[in-house]
Length: 302
Length: 229
Image (cartoon, rainbow over all chains, first blue to last red; front, side, top):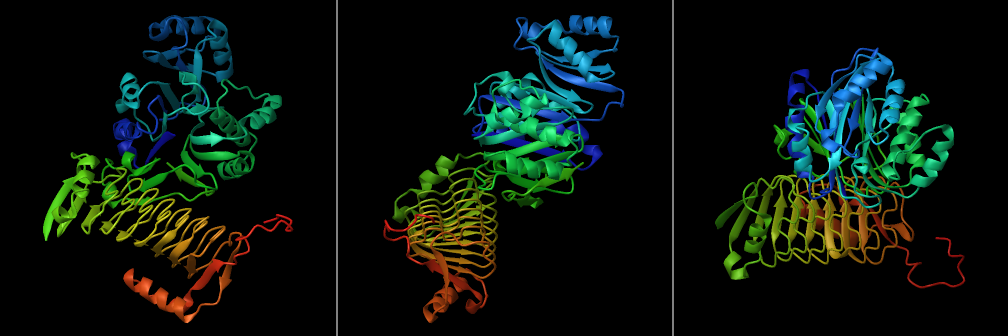
């Protein structure tokens, strides 16, 4: 079991409330996923020449006392990228000039145990083990702002309970995916992708789905085309919720084995595994509430 | 009639259900209103007395499951397994219902005004189900007894491995399951349809429905068949 939440705000005036509206949604999915939680938030885009990466130091020896200032100083001395970090304990969002690859390679060289959670111009990502309420508190999810987000609460069924196996998973830039369910052919998907130079960081089945779909998008498919190939290539049970710079997208397997419900008003589109996570949203009593059909694609744009 | 309200925003589902499991003479004549259900699971399960319950909002998993004698109305939608294993009484969902609605119901009447998800009426054992909208795939799978009335369309594999339950469909059937076949409507069928539609407050013409029932070719093991079902 796992819990999925997603929220897309239709009015920029509401962007400052994104985190505040989301926290009860995430906590509402605690019974479905008490072991880990995570959140990917899409905010205002950085200029074309800049990138940001979300980093996790919980797997290093220093943990939450990680020397982020030292890392940024070393980065600037070596690469001259004008890097700056916004730190929340064992997470930091580092913004810098130029492309992401040299900075990510530098991070991997200087400390291979630092985990790169996400890369892009809009996405910030936080995930860790613990109860959803504790994870939300740890990283002040309530004060997050932005246009849309993808969140997850995990009850692990097929790989260990560790921060790097928590969801959301990311691949490429500004793309993330969360999963409720289990895939039966993740290793086949890995064996197909690895010879194409696509590297995996965990043994988790969701990572295979995330890297497959991002690979299709990078190969030029639009989102519906990539999702259609996902239906063909990915076998098993799934409700997937994905985030791109300007969209949320949802698909369910043909047997609809894993739940999903959507509430839509003039102000927002909210997605969750169960209605319990939507019940607190403003004016939800007048929202259009529906259950997404199996094997259909749902894409909502900001 | 005595009215009692349970507010699930500050009362636990257990308090509601424990009251609903009171002796029949305690519940006699009571009308229970459940406000702020907010998708909670197991609302009004296991009732064993003629009492009326109105759930004013969306219900979570297994709402009104195992119902016996009671009349339960859900004013919003119902999640997975509404009225599953119902024995008697009536459950009325005014919104849509998710997967497995009315699964293995032995008796009673389940009315869903909107659509029902996948596997509606799976393993039905004698209950009646009327769906105002459409049903998802694998509905009526292995249904043994009882009747399903689908006013909209049906998804894939309708009535797969049916026993003696009968399914009536007004709209399109995407595909029939193994051993399910469309049969001519008899007068008994139109009378049954008229009765069930009227109980559900629907005015469709019974003759617009198709009857789906078992071809009974799977009832006995045939060792000579090529086992290609």
